Length: 197
Length: 403
Image 1: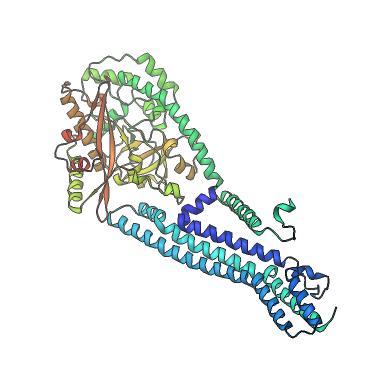
Image 2 (image 1 turned 45 degrees about the vertical axis):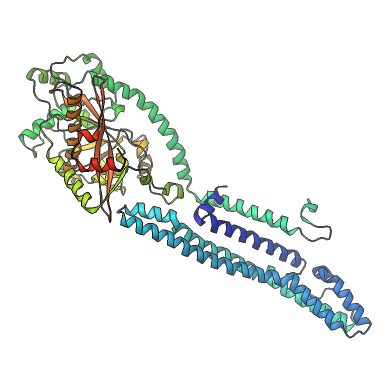
C-alpha cells in the first residue's frame, strides 16, 4: 500500500511502526468501550430509569443478584457487594478510558522524541552539506531525507491522532454514555437496597 | 457473518473488529493519499515514459541521417556569415538574420536538433560535394527552424557557398560550430521522498580543498584565453550537462518559434535584452521533451509547440570548453598520425562535465573530452591524463577515480 510505504518512509521505520501499533491499540480500546456502552441510551429525552434496560449493565448481572439476595436477607455485608459492583465497573469501563488517555500522552511524547531524533539527523546533514559546499537545494533535500521529514511528521502525527482520539473519547458516544451508565447503576443499586421492583 | 464478529453472549469480538477497523482506516487513508496526490503528476509520469521511448525511436533514424550527411558536408552558411561580420565589426549585424529585434544579434544556433537534419558542418577543402541532389530536397522537405530558414532566404545558396570555399581555399573558422548534446533527465527537485534522493549523489562531483579549488578554477578560466578564435571548431557532444549546466553559469531558455521565450529556471518570460551578456554561442538540447519535459509542461508548453531549449552561456565558459575540445582534437590527430592540417570540423568530440566543489562552499563545472569520432569513422579514446598534462582538475578527477 502506497500510504503505508509513504508513512514508514516519512515517519521513519521505527517511529512509523510505533505510531501504527499505537493506533491499533487505541482503536481496540475504543471498540471495547463501544461494546460495553452501546446499549446505554444516548438521547436526552430518554430516561435512564427504564427497568427494561438491564442489557446496558448485563455484565454486572451476577453482582446485582448477589446484592438482591443480601438485601432481602437483611445481611450486613451488602455494602461490600456495592463496592464490588463499582470496582467491576472500573475494571470494565474506566480502565479503558485511562488506557486511551495514556496512549495519547505516550504518543505525544513519542512524537516529540521523533522530532528531536529527526532534527539531530537533519541538522547533521545540513552542517555536513554546508561544510562541503553543496548547493542549497541539495542540502535541503538531503536534510529532508535524513530526519527532517521524521521530525515534522511525527509531531504532526502525534498531534493529529491525539487530537482525534481525545475528541472521540470526550464525545457523547463514549464519555457521556459512561457517565450515564454510572447513573443507571446507582439507581439500580438504590432500587435493590430500597426494595423497589 | 454475525458469528464472525459476536460471541454467543452477545459481546463483540473486539480484536477482530479492531483489526477490521484498522485495515479499513488504512484503506481510507490510502485513498485520501492517492486523491491528495496530483493527478497531473501521475499523467506526467506516464506520458513521460511513452514520450521518451518515442523520442528514442525517432532519434535513431535522424542520427543515422546525420552521420550520412557528415560524410558529405556542406558549408555552414551561418558560420560563414558570422565570421565575415565579425571581421568587419562585432556590433554590425548587417549580414546576420535578425529574428530577435532587441538590438543584439540573434544567438546563432551551434547545434541543430537532429530531427531537423540541418547540417552546419563545413565543406572540407578540396573534397567534392556528392550529395547535392540529396541534400537539397532533404533540407527543403524537413521542418526548418525559423533562424535557419531566414538564413537560407537571405543568403547565397549552400551549394554555391561551398564551391566558393573550395575555390578560394578559405580557412574555415566558423564562430559557431555544430554541437549536439546527449542529456539524461532534467534535474528535478521534488519533496517526494524518492525524487528527493538527489541525482547529485550520482553526479560526477569532485571535492577540493580551498587552495586546490582556486588553482583549478584559475587554470580552467585561463584556458579559455588560449582558444584560437580563428581556428575551426570541433563538434561537441556533452554528457551530464543537464546536471551541472548551472555550474557553467548557463541559462536554460525555451526558444519558441525562433525567439527566446521562457527562462526554465523560474518560468519567467525572457526579454531579449536580458540575454545580451551571454555569448552568441548557445548549446541546443537535441531532445527537449525527453530531457526538460517536466519543466516545459510546468512552464505551460505543449508538445505540439514549436520550441527548443537552448543553454545560453558566457563567452569565457564557451571558450574554455572549446579550448579543451580543440586540445583533445590536436592530441588525437597527433596520436593517430593524421595530417596536421586535418580540419577540426571533421571531428566530433564527446565529453563529460564534472562539478568541482570547494570545502566550505563554492562550485563550478569543468568539461573533459572522452572520445573523438572522425567523419572517417575513426574513433579515438582520449586519455585525459596524457592529453591534458598539467591540468590540475584532470589530475584531481583522476585521483578521485572519476576518470
